[in-house]
Image (cartoon, rainbow, N blue to C red):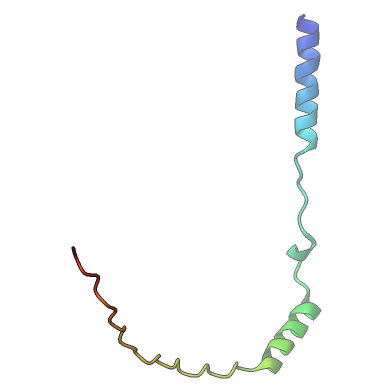
Length: 71
């Protein structure tokens, strides 16, 4: 009984340890060439044009409906 339990616990620990990842994404390193191209493309775009002022909608008064007669 204890032997089977020990094997089960060791198997669970082994599976749990194999799922831990210590990898970094490739974008962690700084790339001077990429940064320069990115800066150049952003400066080429310039400032975006200013958005036009929002138009205020026309206020429409609600129409009055007929009242129901009470009996």
